[in-house]
Length: 301
Image (cartoon, rainbow, N blue to C red; front, top):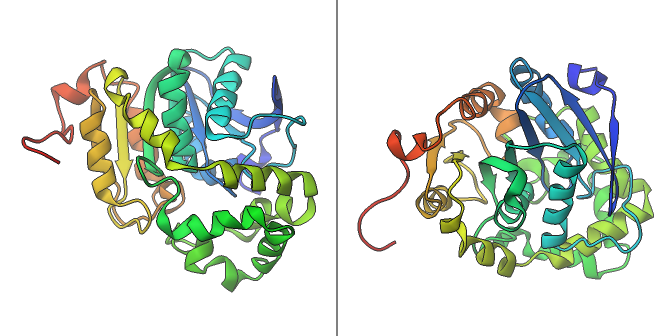
């Protein structure tokens, strides 16, 4: 059992239902937001080093690998999930949060920062959906499975074998390092065993659309809080040019490269990611535009 797995799971009661989470450490809050069909175990290797100086909170959001379904009628649209993140921050009475997002969770963090950003002090985006890439083109056929009865159950069970999990259309192009078997089981078991979770996943899949990320992107200029773009240039689905674009469009942003990694930078390069996140809240406000590369350049995009 990893130190993260040994942490007692807590529960936050939100208007939408119960969200379970783990936390470690004290100090300024850092909240780690995962993507679709993974859970807080995605962050296991970065929680402990960050918790030396911060209060680190990793929720199991209702994105398919959670074990507690939301209440009936909960809004599972992208904006609804962003509101849920905001309500989670409020339930824990968190302020000045460093909000960290990956994959689908990065898109939700963008929506949270733009539409419900009162409790967000800083934003960290690792490889994630953004702009017109919500979802990335390679995953459009996968998300359409939400329309087919029984398809999500079949998909979850088809990924039981290890070789199937490492296929590009599954988890194979998301991390260079193999993910621990027990962690993979935690990712997949909810959709394999719980009809309520499968219904939520189907609703989420059918609600994902680029209109939400493009609408948020049109307002990036109004978000003047510090933003760190920590991106892996080798990522298959979220190209580095998207990271450069994000760094240009946020007025107080800095771009950092994470080498030798795919989308799941917390799996492939946890030490590098933890160092970047830990250093970010210590920087004075405005540091991104005073030093470092902001991604801005002259001339048209």
